[in-house]
Image 1 (spheres, rainbow, N blue to C red):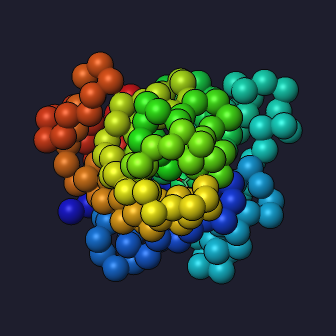
Image 2 (image 1 turned 90 degrees about the vertical axis):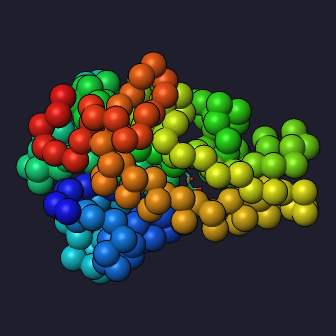
Length: 218
Ligand code: GRF
């Protein structure tokens, strides 16, 4: 099995990034993290990357006049490392259209709720869990999906449900969901890198030839 060069994007703590790193190290995911990109110079993810000799860089959208220019800078960094696949692990900024296009169906994001509910612009971090808590839902979960031009709306790769009827706060829900995220994100990445998959409408069809683990699919 060949090893895919991936980039991880993270804005904060980076626990999902760390789990992906560990699961690559133990041989579960056939990949190499060749780049960590953050928009936040204080991200825990950056400190972890630096401590583990993972090339990392900070690229902030506010330093660019347009999303396109931000995207060009991202593409420059990604192509310099020959990145084939991108994992958004707690990344809070919108991926510019030129990057989405270049890496069409080769970018995954993890969202800490069962999409299409509790997603969209402004729905990230604890805000998601607050909305779930206030809704009175008895089940939450996570969604790993491919990234398209809309927030949290790309084709779903994998979902896992988590019972939350014993949770007394949004923070309780966040803790329970995060535990399952740490299993699900490596599982989804492995699935996509090892199997061929096709995207039909908004559906991901695993085992169907279209997007394969190879460089240069556009
Ligand atoms: C996770 O809950 C993830 O689903 C969401 O942001 C959080 C990031 O946590 N997108 P961490 O930085 O991976 O610890």
